[in-house]
Image (cartoon, rainbow, N blue to C red):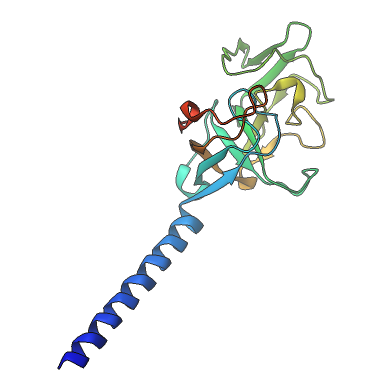
Length: 190
């Protein structure tokens, strides 16, 4: 009898372990994933080395202006996913006054307290530009050190190439200025 109880306990333990692993695999495949930030194009909002919790494309629905997204497109220079901010969605018109450093969507200037500096770097895209159906126009917060939708080689991004929306900063990378982690930055992303 004792041997049978021992075997039942082992079977239940293995069953619980398999169910836990399967649940974790499904959650991280279809629900959320962790993505690292590489580069300075989103400074000061995000730093090189930050680890983000990303809600997968299937769960996050449509994208809105201001969302921080992770996109992977074959045309990207490095082939690695990029982290950028949605500036405009399908049907909206983007215009940029590079002399004034201002970005306009549908004729209204954006209030962008998150940017590192005004937008003075023109990369070749013709403006005004209307975002096609099923696409987003993305830019980095470090505007003059970001390869984004202003570059005609990258252009607007089809939402099928968007992996998901970054919702939470899990682990801060070392800041460029201080060379250390600022734990106070951990939390929900805006």
